[in-house]
Length: 297
Image (cartoon, rainbow, N blue to C red; front, side):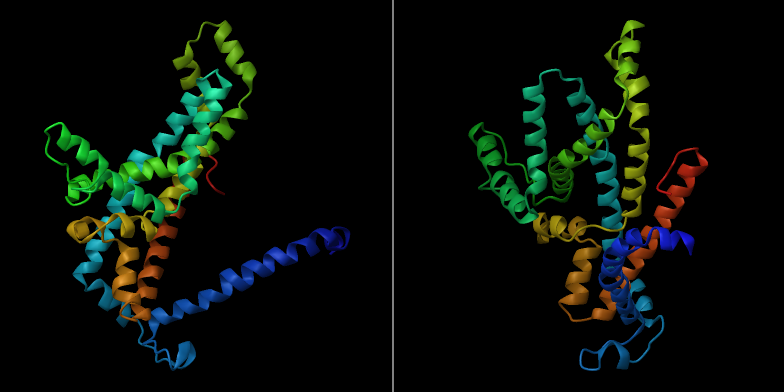
């Protein structure tokens, strides 16, 4: 009680953000009960009848769900393998550049795609990589080469999807790692240089250990989202030719749950994604703590 009386102004400042989270984050959680009800728009959440686990049983009996689940995990895993190291490498390379004007220009160019919506990026990708009218394929045809089906053949689409993701998000990650690098004591670099350590040794023994905690925290957060894929990217870049790979849980929910007005089914899939994501987050954080790293908490 003494602490509350002493710091009452700080507690007052907490009221507004706590009210925000309570109203907009916790109260809407009541809506997950739809997953256990035969939801009817006219009856509302309260009066719709309970059906227990029937909606989940229906979801888990659908072959399309398992295809979407496989694709979501696969695309996120590829993003993790291809996209996760990219900002680390870029940040280290930029940190080694001594020309400040080039460094600033490169950061701006790298960060710019992060501000573009996926609608605009989808338009750019189509203009560049369309099978017949894309600039890249027009260039290939002018050289006498066959057009490459970047967007209409599933394996080419998979590569295109990963590279577009790297291009769009690497700049943001690079800024985070560059901020972490600036917190490293520069006297360590000077001492290593005096001892004759080259650039690669300084990167290996000073830069990478200095940003290790940031890498681990971002890795844990990414693993926590292993079954969560935003709707925009696969929906806009995907098409009916590559639906075997482009149909993920978010597009599955949109197509089967929302377009068919089966809100219970859509909520059940969302709840399943959140539960799996939380398990991944807890497990990876536990492993990080056991390995002597800080983790998220």
